[in-house]
Amino acid sequence: MSLLLAMFGFSLAMSITPGPVNMVIISSGVNYGFVRTLPFVTGATIGFTLLLAAIGLGLYQVIEIYPQLLRYVAITGSIYVAYIGYQTAVAPTDHAGIERIQEPRFYQGFLLQWLNPKAWVACLSGVAIFSSSDNHSNLLTFTLIYFLVCYISLSIWAIAGDRASLLLGSQYRRKVFNRSMGSLLIICATYLLYSQAFTD
Image (tube, rainbow, N blue to C red):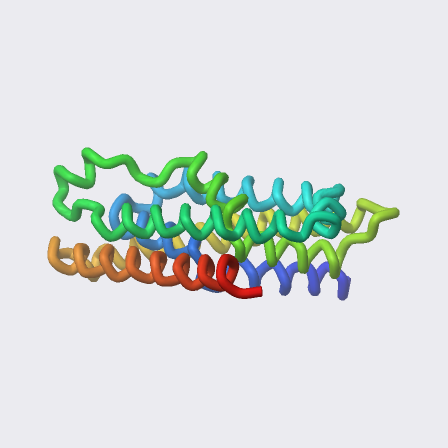
């Protein structure tokens, strides 16, 4: 029971805390509502748990042999996060514009997790703590728990965005919100890119 609680606590701490994926979700919730954000939430959850399983089943050893691989992923991910930040910042706020632009899709949520440095850190840390090379039962349990916790946590962010849209009723407020969230994503991506590309 203590192991299950530890897995749950770790999953919740890593899933509910702010990160690039959560920021995209709350922004999508504000602009498109909970239902239209759900495909992105589903893609992000499945993408993360498959990354977790892949690392636990052998990708961890590949990274130990080729540690530079993680740096390249982080650089690519940072660029992708910056692109999403730009898209968020310039997103239309009028009703016609919102209907014309597609909300974040399933594949974008999936891809973002595989390019998200926070997701890689969470997976590597979780596998190191809760998995063993000679017994995959703990990895399976951890992956199932993480899937449920991650899906619920990301859904909460989508609901929060949906509810926040009531407070951001005017077009001007939504524009300020979108630019703020987009700027935060770009700042986060710039910091990650700098830390990976220009520091040892």
